[in-house]
Image (cartoon, rainbow, N blue to C red):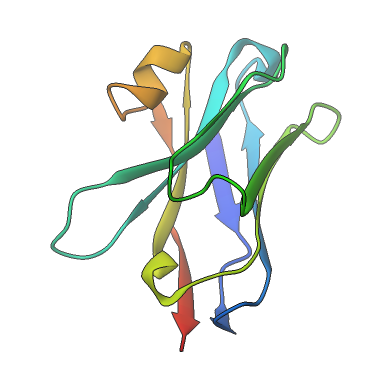
Length: 124
């Protein structure tokens, strides 16, 4: 069974740091691109960042560049998103997803498998 488990969300104040993790199982981890998305109720889903588990190729949305860092641990089959200098506009439900191509994650903003979201709330 394919599972993506996102965790690490919480309530923080603006300017603080939070680290999200996405633990994957049931897939050949190094064949997949893992992406992080976020969504505010009533708004379109937004791609945040992605990483290729083998080559380490990364993508960051403009809103994430310079503040967020994505990393992959192939031993633990876990992708993490370190979010620094958080802003209230970062408040959203964050989801991780897996796909076989970066194009699907980055441009189609979709994945083959999705984890349940973890809520990040940034207060001002």
